[in-house]
Amino acid sequence: MKNLFTMALLGLSITAFAQTKKCTYEYVKDGSNLGWTAFKTPKKVGVSAKFTEFTISAKPAGSVNDMLSNASFVVNSQSVESGDKVRDAKIMQFFFKKMLKGTKITGSVLKVADNSVDVQM
Image (tube, rainbow, N blue to C red; front, side):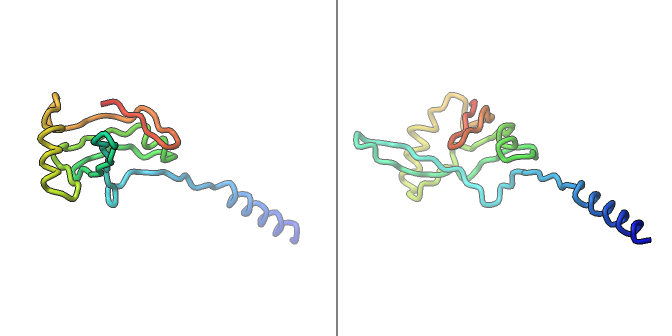
């Protein structure tokens, strides 16, 4: 009887350890923000801003890098927000308005590295 109980307990413990949960990562836009810094003037003074309208499409994956490496994005280049309305208007007029493909910036991720992401636009 004691052997039967020990065998049953051993069988249950092996089953418990054999079952592993699979973790998946997926992109959630809440809290995401898309910022950038442009460097102007001969002194290379940085001016930071963000785009307020963008979408990122990424399939769930087993790691963050795998999820990002298959992502694509669409950015409304007219949604610039730098904290200065006059500067925003100038950025849109002199930079983003001159884009050949219109107001949308589209692309996909080619490679995810430690501190950078290579994209194709």
